Amino acid sequence: MGLYNSVFAKFYDPFMKGFEKRIRKNRLELLKDVGGEVLEIGSGTGINFGLYNPGINLTAIEPSQAMIDVSTAKNCDCNKIRLLKTSITDPLLFNELKESSFDYILSTLVLCTIDRPEIAIKNYGKLLKPDGRLLVLEHIHSTKPLHKKLQNIANPFWKAFSEGCNLNRNTDQMLIQNGFVPVQSEYFVKTLRFVQGVYVNG
Image (tube, rainbow, N blue to C red; front, side):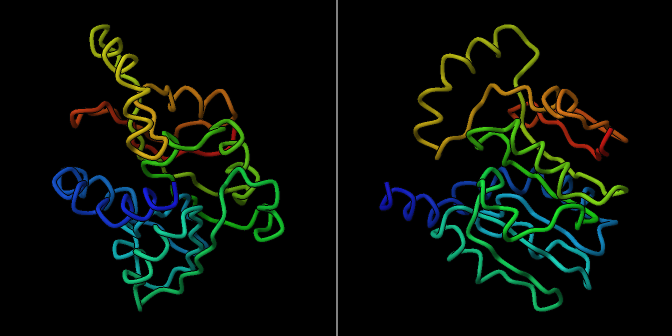
C-alpha cells in the first residue's frame, strides 16, 4: 500500500492535468476573497497553494506523506504555510488545531475520499470561527437514474484504484444534515456532477 501510495502521488498531477484545467476557474472563484487564518483539508499535491491570495496564514492537513512530499515543492513564498501530516477525522487532531480558530476552511475534492465524512464535517464546524466560512468544491452523486446506477456499479473498482475516492456520495446533503447552511451554491457537470459553495454553521 505504501508503494502504491507513492506511485499514486507521483502520477496524480499528470493524470489530473486535463480535468484540472476544466475546474481551475472554479477553484479561483472559490478562493478569490479568502484571507486571514485558513485551513485546507486534504491538501494532496498542493494544487491550491499557488491560488491563494497573498498574506494569508495557511494550515494544510494531509494524511499521506507521499502527497506532502510532492506538495512541498509548490509552497508559495508569498504565504505562510504550515503542513501537518494528519486527517480531519483523527481523534488527536485537536492537539494540533484549536477550535474556533479559522476564518475559512477549504474542502476541494476531499469529502469523496474521507472514511467518515460526517465526522469530518462536524470537525469543520468546530474549527471554524463563529463567523467563519466553509468553501466547498466536491463531486457528488448524479441525479440522473442511469448515471447513478453506473456510478454505484463502478464505485468499488474506482475506490480501490483511486485511494478511496467514492463516486456516489451526496455530499451536499450531508453538509446540510450536519449543520451547515449554504450562503451560495451552484451545481454543474464536468463529467461528474459537482457542488461549489460557501457554507456557514447553522
